[in-house]
Length: 482
Ligand SMILES: [Zn+2]
Image (cartoon, rainbow, N blue to C red; front, side):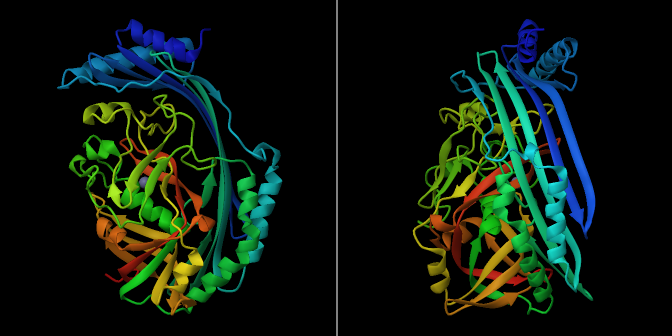
C-alpha cells in the first residue's frame, strides 16, 4: 500500500481540501513505580494512529483514526474535510498560513545508553535501593519511579513536507514523606511533580544518582517535621532548579502562547496579560531578565527537530533585557498578527489531537554571577526549594507558589530550614524585582512532563533552562495560612 500519510493527503485533496497535513504516530511508554518497598506498578502503554488536518472552504477540519488501514485513513480524511466545510459556515475570515519551506528529512533520536538495554529487574532494583535508603523512622511513605517514552512520527503535508522524526524521553524521581501527628512533610528529588525528564537515554537516570540522594531527602523530610514555620512578611528570595523552572513556566511560558493571547485557547487559566500592544515595549522584568524559547537544546524535554506543522525547531527571544519582545507562534497566528514566519511551537499530544501552541524550552538565560555569590550577598532571605503547589489567575498575573522547603539565609550564609514556605507576587513586579541571575555553572534544563492545555485536554512535555535568581522584597508566608 502507498504510504499512510500520502493516502491521507491524497484523499483530503480529492475531497476538496485546499491544504492537508497528516501525522502517523506510534509510541510506547513504560513506567516502573515503587511505593514503600513494593513494586506498585509496571505500566506500558502503546499508541498508534494517524491524524489528518485540513483546510477546506477556508476553515480547519481535523479527524483521526487508531486503525491505520487504507479504508480508515481515507474515511478520516473525508471526515476532516466535512468538518472543515461545516466550520466554514460560521467562520468570518478564511484561515491564512504564513509560508514554510517544505522539508524532507529523517531525524533519529539521540542517546548514549539505550533504555532497551536496561533490564526491568535492574530498573526495579534501583527503586528498591532508594527505598531502603529512605526507610527511616518517621518516614511513612517512600515513592520512586523511572519512565521511558519512545515515539516515531511521520509528518507529510500537501505542500511537499515529508518528515520522519524519532523521539526518546527518559526520567525519574524519588520522594520521602515524613509524618508526625498532624504534620506531614515531603522531600522529592529531583523535582516534585514529574521529576526530571529529558530527551535522552538511560544516562539521564545514571546522572541523577538517585540512590546517592535518597538518604539525604529522607533525613530532610524528618528534619522538616521539627523545623520552624516559614516567617511571614517581605523578604528577599532565591529560586533555583525546579522552582525557578515552574516560575518561568507559569508566569512567562503560558502568557506568551499566542493562541491564548488571541482568545482561541482559554482552558486551564487561559488568557494572557501580554496583549499584542505590549510587544516590543512592555517592561516584563528588570534589565537582568533575558528569556528565550529554544527547541534546539540537546536533551531538553521541549526539544525536537520539527513541530507538528513541519516548521524547524528554533530559538526565539521572548524577553530581552527585561522588555517583552516575542511570542510562541504558529503558521496561523503569525498570519493573523502579521509577525512573519512561525517560530515552530505547534505540537499535539498524540495522533488523535489537533496541534496547538505549546512551550518548547522556555529558558531564563544565565547571568554572570556565581550562585554562591548571590547567597553571600543576601543579608536576610530564603532559598526556596522544590515546588509543592501553585496557583495563578486567568491573565497570569497574580500567583502563589508553595515549596517543600526553604533555606534561611542570614548575613550571606545558610543557617537552617523552615517548613511550609510560600511566596506570592504579580508577574511584572516580581520579575522587575529580580536583581541577580546566576551564571551557567548552575544552569540546567529542567523537564516539565505534565503541562496541561486544550479542550479536550492535552499534556505537553516542555523544558526550562534555569540557574538561580534572586528577587528583592517578596511577600512570603506559610502554606495554608491565607
Ligand atoms: Zn503548563
